[in-house]
Length: 302
Ligand code: PSU
Ligand code: MN
Image (cartoon, rainbow, N blue to C red; front, top):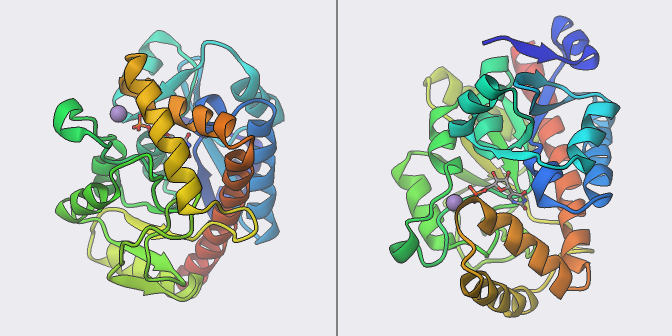
C-alpha cells in the first residue's frame, strides 16, 4: 500500500540520507497538549541535529503517512476523536478514512514498509501486571519480532510486568541490548534490577548488531537507553504513585487500549508533572541515539 511521504522525508530518502521513524500515539494519546507538541518538536530537532531526518508515522484521513509537516503534527497533538492505532487497526483505519496516532506496533510496521530501519519511541508496550486475569499483552511485542526495525526506547514502564515482558521478548526471539548499561532501564527510572545479557557502548557498535540481524534476515531488535539522570524519577516514587493509579484503573473498570494512556495521565497528575518532564527528556534522548544509530548504519552501508 502506498505511503504519503512528506516533502522533507521524501527528499532525504531520494538522496539516501539516514532516516529515523517516530511514533505518534505519544502525541495523540500519550502526552497532554501542548507538551505533546513540544515533545514532537524536540525529538525532530534532536534527530536533525545528528544529521538524520525524522519521519513521524500516522494515519490521516485513511492515508498512511511517512513524515508529517507542522500542520499535520499540530492536528495530531490537538485534534479530538483521534484513534490509537496499533497494527491490527491499520486496515480498518484505511478503509474508513480514519485519523490517528500510531503505537509502537503500527509504527514498526509502517517503518518496515517504508524501508526505514531505525525507530525512536519512549517506552515499549508489554505484558501488563495482572496478566493472568486480563491476558493484556501489548501487540508491540509480536510486532517487534515480526518487523526488521531497530527500536530505541527507555526500556518499558514499570506500569508493566517487566520480568514477564522480558520473558516474552525472549520467547519471541527479540534481543534487548542496554546502551552503556547492563540493567534494563524502567522508563521514568534508570533502574529496574533486571539484568540484560547484552549491551553496546555506542551507536557504532549498535549499528553492527543491526547489520548482523539484517544479514541473518531476522526481525527487530530493541536498544534500551537509560532516561537522563537530571529528570529521572526514583523507583520508590514511581511505585507508590503507580499502585494508586493501578487501583483506580481497576475501580473504574478501565481496560483494553485505555489502560496505558490512563496510567500515564494519572502518573503526571500524581507526580505534579515530574513524570511528564522525565517523559519529554527521555523521548528527546532516545531520538538522539536513534539518529546516531541511523547515521552509523548509513556509514556501514554507504
Ligand atoms: N509508552 C509511553 N507513552 C505512550 C506509549 C507507551 O510512555 O504513549 C504508547 C506507545 O505508542 C505504545 C503503546 O506502543 O502506548 C502501547 O499501548 P498498549 O499497552 O495498549 O499496547
Ligand atoms: Mn493492551
